[in-house]
Image (cartoon, rainbow over the protein chains, first blue to last red):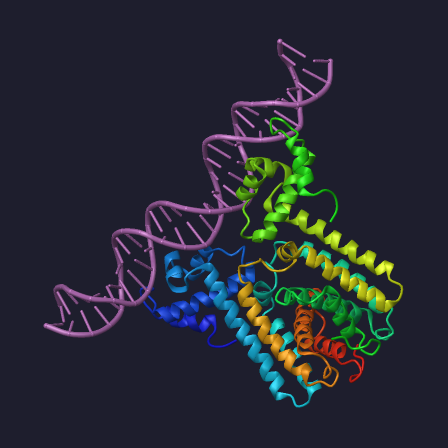
Length: 210
Length: 210
DNA sequence: TATAGTAAACTACTATAAGTAGGTTACTAT
DNA sequence: ATAGTAACCTACTTATAGTAGTTTACTATA
């Protein structure tokens, strides 16, 4: 992440005797506080009243400086997306070979997630906490199915159960993401998409599909 | 999907002269109407007032019969999840070989999504419409990066641009899903996860990692 | 050092939506 | 005919996003 920490900002703020703080400082404080709040409670369970309380300022100050709850969230989403993107891009650039680039890019992603787990969840995944239990349950069922399938593939026979389990979840994510991407490519037939994933999974056993 | 259509239910309802309708019929109507509403507007932009209006009933009737907005959504989520699951399982069971099972399962998934696209989005993906533009933008950047990488791999050199683009999105989905799964497997190091995906992508070029 | 101008902040409101208390209507069994 | 109850209603409370209009204190200039 870029720029200063919340502690540094609040240090500077404490220097202003009557609590009147320049715009740019206040905005930085609001955004950093909101990041924390969204990470703590998710979008739906975060309120602007609570944010105002955390910042120790009245609500109109928040609205004056960041517009709306939506807009605040979008700012953080976009900024964090850029941070993530540039971390991955830098890692890829620093690696020499293709293999190393893939590995380094993935590693940069997982490192980023582990450093900002709750924020990443709140921003990029579902509305944290509301239906996660139910969705996790459904994902588990589907991943078990996929896991059983690939366990019987000779391409995966030498791998550990934990690996199979993780890859099964990853594959489910691939299916979901492809279905989302499909919205903007409506001409493709379901058969085509199904073939693509099979090919990705078992490249040596199947012909290339186009 | 199981059971009756909304038209069949409303036909039966219209037989009750004074608008007083047995519980089970009313519940079926509410759930089917809510499916439509969530598909139309997403969870956050759907209101119980609107649902009551669509069902032509007052709000306490809705609450009496389905408990709460959350609970209603969860019911639909779980039911639809089961429908999806059983469609995939049946398709897999009917196929003979491993390859055919994988292909049939994937096809069943994509067929289901194409039949219930907006509902599937509202249930399983993000809070439709609120921040999708921003998230799609970020996904696109990351997928472009992944796409560029795999384009230069000899494992993908013979594939069409549209295929590469789709697979890049699918791969991003795999990364995201693995990061979510990681929450429940905190002992794994980021390096391990990164290796897993590289292995999945380029199985012939890399040793198996455990 | 008084004061005009303005940046920063406030109190007190509106609007919308989830959820509920308590009462009314009409079907059903005797 | 009517007692009991299933189905339904009106009218509220609570919570939260967002706003109108006002006040406070810092800053520049006389």
